[in-house]
Image (cartoon, rainbow, N blue to C red; front, side, top):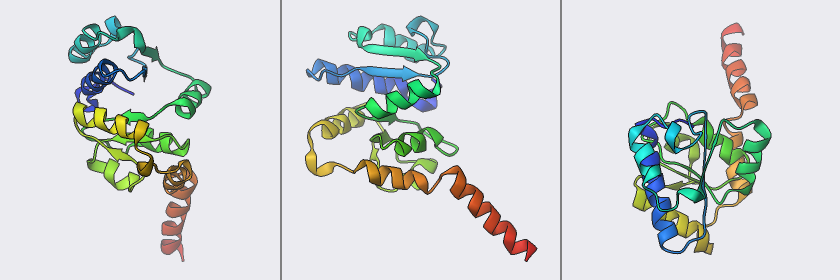
Length: 173
């Protein structure tokens, strides 16, 4: 995704730094066309967060990724973390859910409407850190991959097309 201020990537990096400092052996993967390395980041706050990270060698900036790489990332991630202040719709979150990937995202705008209770909500860097720990260790907390995939199906392109056709049929008789 992008690195504009609403995406709160610097808070994600802060949460990652805290998790690593607490001994959690994790890696942070950032993918998107503006994520080709810390020096190429256009957002000065995110750039500073990256360059000041003691764990920069464990933050992988992949840039734009093709479909097969993105699929592999979703299938092998502990979680897809998307702490956005607001979204128009939240397609990246639905994409992660489609693969059954656990999602940590913000409880706002369209995100709360499309995710139901199959995601974990976190709005600050400390919230993100805590929710990652819960995903790692709290067995009672787990939502199944099937539940996440079922939620994503509610917003598939086919479902959208069927809804539009149903509404159009009301006008055409």
